[in-house]
Amino acid sequence: MAEWFECKIKYERTLENGMVKKVNEPYLVDALNFTEAERRIIEEVAPFMTGEFQVSDIKRARFAEIFETTDAEADRWFKGKLVFVTLDEKSGKEKKSSHNILIQASDLRDAVKRLDLGMKGSMMDYVIASVAETPIMDVYHYKADIPEKTE
Image (cartoon, rainbow, N blue to C red; front, side, top):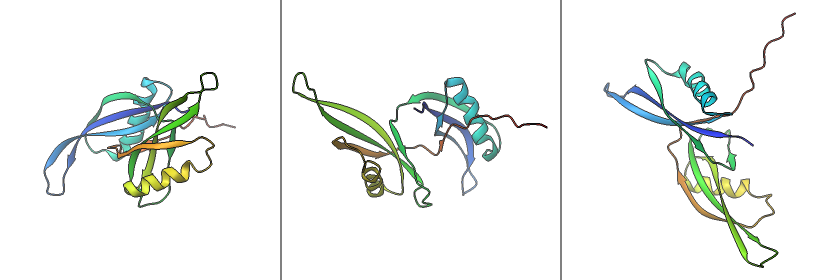
């Protein structure tokens, strides 16, 4: 299972009108620990940054699943909260557990549609408790560092 970290990058962005504004943007990184998450986010964003930037915050992000798409219009990330209802066999009572899901979509309606599509094969009963847009800019999956073979 992936271990996700939300890393915030602080840098100065030049706006369309020529003004410079300090921004703090969150990114999601799959890493083993906080140290690796910082190293990976620096590697990922450095080619796209002009000037100085810094990692201003790193925290764990709990996502049970991430539903991604290659659709170019799906440029935003939404956090969905699913509530699963199970029956406790001993007591006979309903037991609820909630899980956070990250969905890549173009708008809220598309996010709900993609969430339902992603959960299509699930055998468990679930209820969508909430879906909201996140400020996450991009998601970076884990890539193993495989050394090249020399002959």
